[in-house]
Length: 114
Length: 113
Image (tube, rainbow over all chains, first blue to last red; front, side, top):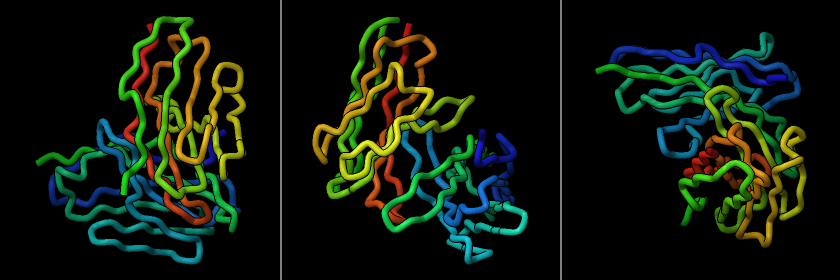
């Protein structure tokens, strides 16, 4: 059973456009949502994250929008650059004091054409 | 600070062989994870250790996959015997725990012929 779903699976945008990657989840107890970015030949790396007490988190050109009621979130990449071409993973977990285990979506491949 | 180190980067095995993948987590991290990555399934959790204790041993992978933490700074993933469907990238990640970020290694690409 896939706990975290992503759409689209792949997306191509032109340089300078805004790329929007979507994510939805099943478990209403999830309260922490990181996005990881992966370049070919490398492991994923944390890009930006949000907790369920917020509805928006911004870091430079990257913004997460979160809708708790609908159990959906999205990652917006404004002014997309060719260097943003990568695979993006949405993840979710229940944060606990002693540790947490992330559930990952299957990833979305973003291509930014110059 | 050194990140997560995985060796080897590439491994080619014949069907039925035993292979061992290695991982050195970030020093001081309490949690260690092994994932399998494929285009179709994405990231699948194989094993999860907290302070060297096995917390989760991915159900579908129990029979031929065995992860161990020999000490707090070294972990292995043994696949025995290998099958062609095991061809994938195997990722190791560590975390300080709690709300900590996962730090991934670059992975081992396994090809089983």
